[in-house]
Amino acid sequence: MTYSNLQIFTVELIGTFILVIFATGSIVYDADMFDGKLGIPFAALAPFIALLIGVYSFGKISLAHFNPAVTIGYYITGHITKFQVLYYFAAEIIGAFLGSMFVLQFIGDGANLGANAPNYDFSMLLIFTVEVLASAMLMGVIFYVVYTKGLRGFSGVAIGGIVGLDILFLAFISGASMNPARSLAPALLSGTFENLWLYWTAPYIGTSIAAFLFRKKFQAQRATNYE
Image 1 (cartoon, rainbow, N blue to C red):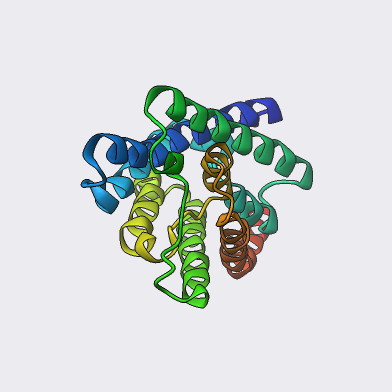
Image 2 (image 1 turned 135 degrees about the horizontal axis):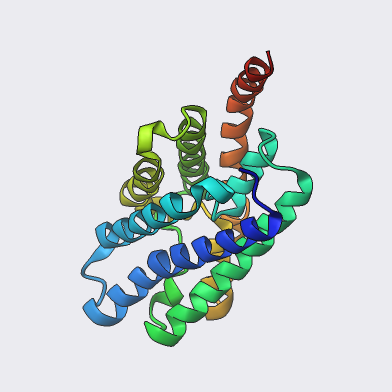
């Protein structure tokens, strides 16, 4: 079944909205209610749950990007058109801002609304590399799910799982955003702009690397389907 760009826009907006509420709201809730004692494990679990909801609810309609860097990866592999990129980007950014406004209104304003921040105890070279790596691993898992046509029903577990694992093991270095929209909304609403350059460069590089590595596989797959 073919879905319209309006349907894709709608589910991407809703999915990104849910993801940002869980991903940033968990950090704000922890900061405001528990003084940060729940820590990174709680921050890793929340987006895992959000992606379970989003992927299983909307994956068949929009491929469940919820992330501009993932959208660029799908564009590189030819899954979406240049025109569709505009729909995805608009939906993801609007959804992210609506999510952050929801967090501000109903959860709290602590921890800069959950804005990502790297650990400057590490070198910027390492921070940047880790953020690229985290984003590349996310895109790689997503492409593997698509290439295997849903990983026999475990697509949401796989995609949510890699995001959770990236946060669990890498957030203490780079902040493990992997998602420019998720980083943009809380940063702008909280007035913390200094780290945005990192989260609007490294994730795109990471997903693009994975996309170029997988592009030939998808081209071969499409050629086989046409034979």
